[in-house]
Image (tube, rainbow, N blue to C red; front, side):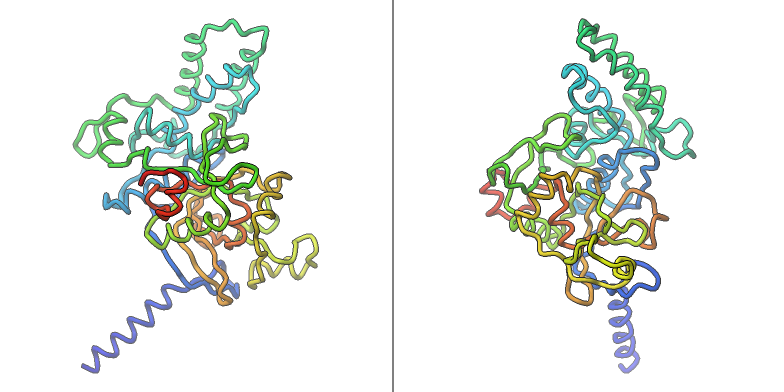
Length: 387
C-alpha cells in the first residue's frame, strides 16, 4: 500500500512537470498547459510561400485525429498547390493582370481544392522531382509569371484559353510532377475524390472567420487582403466573440488554422514567442528588448479599435498561415496560444512550435478556419450558420 501511494505521488509529480515548459534554454518563462490537442509532425515549407497549404493541411490532419481516424495521416500540401496555380492563372488573365498572382494564398484555396478535386497522401504526391531536395518554387513562379504577364496585357487579350491552360499545366507538371488520376494506397485503389471521401472530411463543414469593424458584424464580406485572390467570404464577428470562439474551440477539442501578421519586431521567431507588450518596442531600451525572450512582460490590452487601426494602416497584413493547437499560461497568468508552424523543427528550441500571447493573437489575426461546430451555438445562430 505504501509503495502504491509513493508511486501515485511520483506519477502525479511527473505529470505536473510534463505539463510545464519554457520557450528556450535559460528563459524565465514558465508555461503551464491549459489545453493541448493532438497534431501531426511539424513540416517544412522550405523556400516556398505556401504556408497557407501547410497550415490548412496540418489543421485537417488534427481534424482527422479528432474524428477518430488516427494519427498516421500526412496529406499532400503540394497537391493543393498544384491544383491552385492554374486556378490563379485563369483568374489573373480574366482580370487583365489586375489581381494577385503569387505563391501566397489562403485557407479558402484549400477548401476550394478539396471540394473540386479531393485530396491525396504525401506518399502519393510530394510535389518534388527529387524526394530528398527541399521545396523551392522560385523558378516555378518566375516561369509562370513570364507566361502570364504578357498574356494579361490588353493588346493580347484575344487568347486561346485552351492553349494557355495547357501551357500552365505543362509548366506545373514540369516543376511539381503530374498528379495521378488514380493510385494505390494501403491496399486500396483511389482517385483523389474517393480518397477524400474515405477520410471523412467534408469541406462544407469548415468556415472562415474574422473580426473587423469596417463591415457589419454578424455578416459576411470579402476580406480585403492580397492573397484572397478568389474573393472568398469570411464571417465577421465582434472581437469579444472572436476571442470566445477561439478559446472555447480549443477547450472543446477543436484546433484552428490561423492567418496572421508576423512582421512585428516582437515576433521572436528563433525564441519561440510572439508578443505584443504594453510598452511599445520603439520606446524600449536595449536591455528591455533583449529580455523580451527571457522574462514575461505585461501585454497590451487589445480593443476592437486597436485591432482595426492596425489593419487599416497596414501594420497587420496577411503574412503567414499557421495552426493553433492549444493554450498555455505563464507564471503571471498571461494566456498564450500554442502555435504549430511550418518552418521545420530546427527553427527554435520548441521543435517548430511557438507561443503567441493572447494580445498578439487578438490584434494580429487576419482570419481563422475551423469546424462550424466549434462555434458557440449562440454566435453561430447570429451568423446564420447551420450546425
